Picture 1 (cartoon, rainbow, N blue to C red):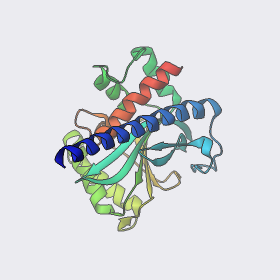
Picture 2 (tube, one colour):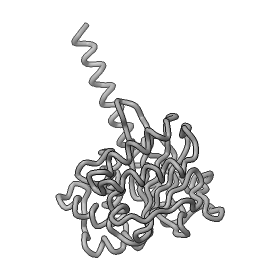
Picture 3 (tube, rainbow, N blue to C red):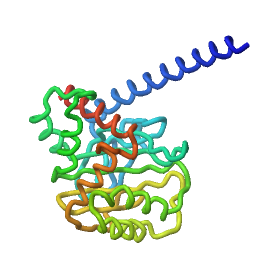
Picture 4 (cartoon, rainbow, N blue to C red):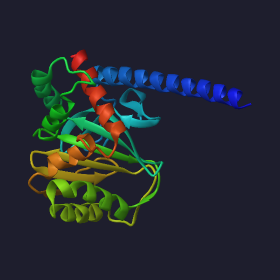
Length: 245
């Protein structure tokens, strides 16, 4: 019985891996197609993800291939799940002004997802001046204070006491005790200015703290990334986009 059960487990695992590989392949095709065809529709500063041509899936969660925040159209690069204690908390999407990728390609032409210079590329991306966005799409209801505390804790080694100011900034922006399942938080950096908004991507609150913008992206792309899946998705997305241009 043990041998049969082990065999079943092995086959099930292989099937799941095959499904995941297929899903990634579909997502990559969707990204390239969306970049070529452009967004289906944009309503002011909002993100419209109702059209299938403007959607892809990250770990089974629909994400827009393009967004518009702080007046700048940005393309999806990569993303992945943020897990905590075995639970799915939110899906991370990393976006940027096309100018960022154009600049990076000049320095990292031929980049592949497993290249040893991923850390350098991620740092350069984090320090870029054109618009970059982290989109957090929540997969469960969570206390707003838990999210602000977690982000503040991750930022503290990078920006010190300024992380406390950022925590308050996020709480004030959310404006309620909880973030419900399906909620979005958009965190956009443009130069040294960080803007944050809820579902829809409308410009909302902004804050300027030296070093904060690079630190936010290092939380997800740095050596101690809080979501290894998102970092991996970013690396694979960069490699795919560079190869397709």
